[in-house]
Each structure stands twice: as C-alpha cells, then as structure tokens.
Image 1 (cartoon, rainbow, N blue to C red):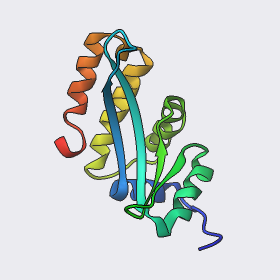
Image 2: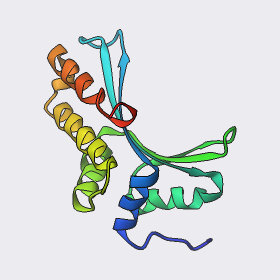
Image 3: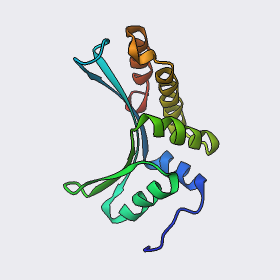
Image 4: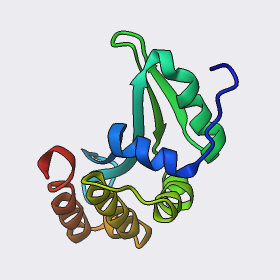
Length: 141
C-alpha cells in the first residue's frame, strides 16, 4: 500500500458515490448583510487505516486537505475552498459523473455553487433559494 496511487478518475466517482458527501452549510453571521454565510464542502471519509488513500486524493486532484479524527478512527479528504470547488471539484464530476442517488446531491451542490458565483448568496432572495435547495439534499432527500 506504500506506493498506492489512484489509477482512474472514474474510481474517485465510484468512491464518492459510496463514501462521499456534498454539503451546503448555512451559518448565521453578524458580519454579513444577509445574516448568513454559505460554505460548500466536498468530503470523502474512511477509516484511519486508509489515510494514504485520502492523502493520495490531494495529489491526484491538486486540492483539499486530510482531517483526522482519532476519537472515531476516521480520516476525511475535504475541499471547502470555493475556488477549488468551482475550478477543480465541479469540473471533475462533470467529466467523471457520479451514478446513483448521490448524483442528485452533486447536482444540488453545483446549483448552489453557480448561484454563489453569480453572488446570489449576498442577498436575502438568494439565501432563501439556497436554503430551499439545501432542504432537499442528503438526508432530507
């Protein structure tokens, strides 16, 4: 496992379908005009024994970081930098699509990213729209 490297981009899409998450976070903020901040987060989680796989994603995709949670023996590959989400993660999954129900979460995630690129997250109407999209993602689907 020492020299393990990702060989196929489609493998990442399949891995994401099983163990990935596209998350939209809305947090209250006293520093914004709308009273909210919006953060997009893509993540893949595995047991700590597979941390080399998580680290190889950084090299392969050219972004992200690995977060280790020693309390529950988990490692997560995380991308929440907006520029990396829009310039690397979204184009990647557009080229190597996810199949199955998780593809719907990706579509919603991308929809929010496009709204944010157009600065909709900076007005109340946009926040309302983002909240509506978020309400039908992941466990709420």
